[in-house]
Length: 376
Image (cartoon, rainbow, N blue to C red; front, side, top):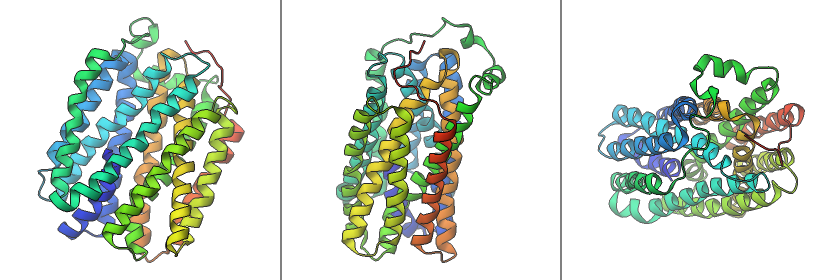
């Protein structure tokens, strides 16, 4: 919901504060820098201090920072707080998937993780509805305050979330960060680590480049602000069947084939979306782009924690996500840069398609299948 809201708020504050395309790109990218810092930092801390505690801490960080950002009066203050919002959210994602993967049997672990990640689409949908119904009436500041209420959910997590299985039970919990990092590149895990870092980079480069700019791209194609927000709501709905299809296939086909097929679909429809000019083609390609992109994203979250033992699982998950966030930094920045230099949407989206093709080649060459694999 938070990331989704940012894509709509960027449109509002660009007009209110008269920001350039490059400045708007920086707002999306600073958020991703925070996501990278949070993923690495809290991935390490989750292995040392426990999954549950870090999950609650990250939720509070990004909820409080979101609420405070509603009161900023200019670009600098907003961009600083967006960094801390990113730190909290970036830490939450790998910690949550690591925790859940350790509580689910191997027969349904992949499916459950993808279903967990499908709530990303629910959040995007809520963000779209807030942007469509609340923001025009009450403004972006009130919308941010409403989204900050998520902080109260920490009370639910504290009471109902199961305690960590591995906390304090392994020597790995007491190892230094440098030792854990060396283990990620030990010959046993080296190829898997390199593969995960590259694939996550390419997925996030394309995802954040496309979706943070989606309302702005639609406006650039000639649609009104209100209509653009409405079209994004419809495209967002297509994310849910993408997740559900991926969740079903990931235990049927395995992790690698599902990720490769869904990335290929994303690459094809990203290119088509860039070339589309009619509303019909924009909506069809946009919905299929959402379907395939988020299906691949969900399968990757199931795949990543299965690649490492408990002692370095959250660290490996966090570093993979953190490196991927660098792609999330470059994606919004690059599209702002390209638009500022007059590059067409067709050419811009073709670049994202090429990045996804690279990810497909890497996972097919270096990745190992983890379906049905026991994890400690």
